[in-house]
Length: 301
Image 1 (cartoon, rainbow, N blue to C red):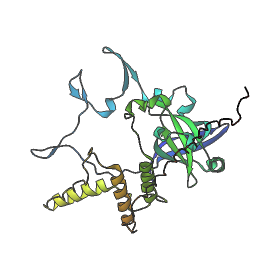
Image 2: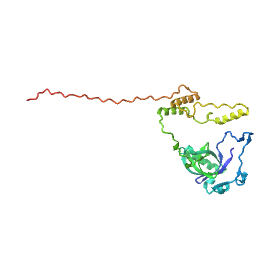
Image 3: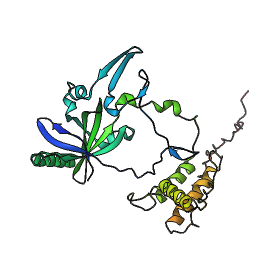
Image 4: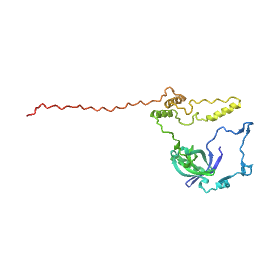
């Protein structure tokens, strides 16, 4: 069972739900240390006091805010815990919004919130069922690690999940990254949609959604342990940045997607729209000029 990393309560109006916070994810990455290559001795970082010119223990280290090069204000963990904020001990719900109104770029790490005491079971279940029926998520404020944060509460398998969120002013404006204006044809858009259809999945439980980078690292470590040559890295089929025929690339991508799913890869051409012949404007009928007939009557003298 994951360890509790924070304890407090969810504040929902006048309803309080005591909770324990636990990490919702695990990191299975391969970890490296730093070594002196000459003798493979472990290289470590030491905590050193510049004024006393000596190494210090963890118990001698605390937080401080630098006002200037000569003045530092010490701040203790106890002082941070006694901050005059309602969010210092509680995850305070401030609003409810539709999930699709939240830009995913603002959503960060996820944490499971578990009821901390038997008395918390009923208000916890109340909030779970209310969120489930509303099809909304809760936006909350909370204070961890020396700063107030914004969070999003949602339900996953009848458990409340807290996602850390970034404040609006922490999101950079991407407008300066926009490419130069270009034209994209309808055929190219249809080709991209056809590729999306062939790459559509019902869920992310497919074996292809796995950490191949970690697997490759493990193969290298195992090969070197057995004094074998590490496996060679396959060359990419297309060099990054290489100019290509966009429609040909889309057609080939659809073929590969179909082949990976065991479908007929030969019938992969993206249907091109037949050009509709332009209607020629109807020719106006040219009116024939009529010469007025000369009167056969003779004028009387």
